[in-house]
Amino acid sequence: MADFCTVEDLEQLLQVEISTAAQVASAERAIAEASAAIRNYCHQEIDLVTNETITLDCAGGTRVFLPELPAVSVAEVVEDDETLTVTDEYKLGQHGILHRIGAKWAEGIQIIEVTYSHGHGTLPDDVVAVCVRAAARTYQAGLRAAASEAVPGVTATSLGDFSVSYADGGGAEGVMGVSGSRMLLMSEKDMLNRYRYVAQ
Image: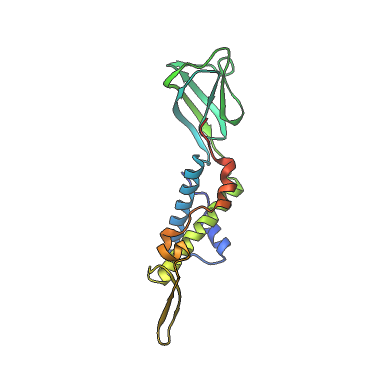
């Protein structure tokens, strides 16, 4: 699975250079975590996956919902150990709905096997944008942790007659450090809702 943005995207957003090995490693980890958070929230792979085979339960009827969207193409459908013929016996419709033609789907547990391609060949701009912003927050939180030697809640330091100021506990990150920062903001989840799969 590919990540949803690059280190260069972070550099452009933050307007900084990420060049040392430690910086690049930190940025790549932040990007991987943001990408995973997006996939977990959406319950989708999102990027293109070719010819994946899945097995589905079915309660009958004429429609089966494929879980990964968009469903690009269907290579094969096997129903109760019988390979079906496209157009004559099944057809892929909109929104990942697999229609049974001239009959109803067999009822049973793990009774339908579908090989299909799904996802976006080119990542949507809003998915990339959410990933960049979420990864940037994680990357910046790591920089702040490094600057304060991983002591949470430090808001200011001074050198003459050395002093340290701490947060009063009003913010989650100030109390719990990097682990207290939210991975995805509500506004970002709103942007991702169009890609989120809700089980039928």
